[in-house]
Amino acid sequence: MDETEFWELVDTTREAVEGDPEDHADLLVERLVQLDPDAVLDFARHFEARYNRAYRWDLWGAAWVLLDGVSDDAFDFFRCWLIGQGREVFEGAMHDPDALADLLEDFDEDLDGDGEELGYAADEAYEQLTGVVSPDLGIPPAPPEPEGTPLDFENESVLSERYPRLWERFRG
Figure (tube, rainbow, N blue to C red):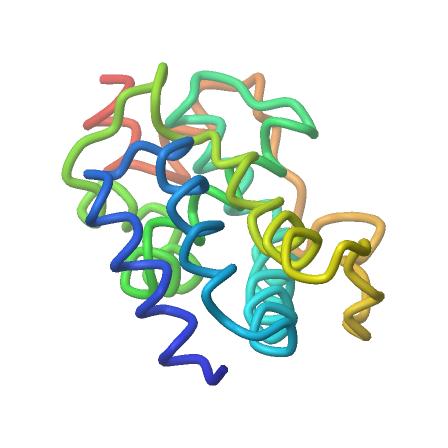
């Protein structure tokens, strides 16, 4: 599975369930079990590489603004959700996290921002196909600390200055 196929699978499953993260994960598992185990592992590698790439302070700050506070675990789930939003949103956020203000049509704190189940979809599909747990993907782990410069998430003026569009749209 190449990168284009990865993103097509993410997009078509999200669109089919109208964006609901839990339904998205369920449909993704259904689609992945139709593939061979090696393709599922390829999907998992693409997902994991992007998940690790999104481990950045500036994205954490954007998640903080969107969700009005984000713990370590919640940021992990946010990164899964962000991948689930598709290539355009993911890459746009990687380029400029404040651009999420323009990239997201809607954002409901109670529904959006938590894609925990998406993070397990490939593992679940692989186990259904093979009866065994997924092997190590051979991808370097995320660094122990997010990349970039930490922000004072508790300081609203820092957040509103760093993320002016997100702040205006979601907190203003």
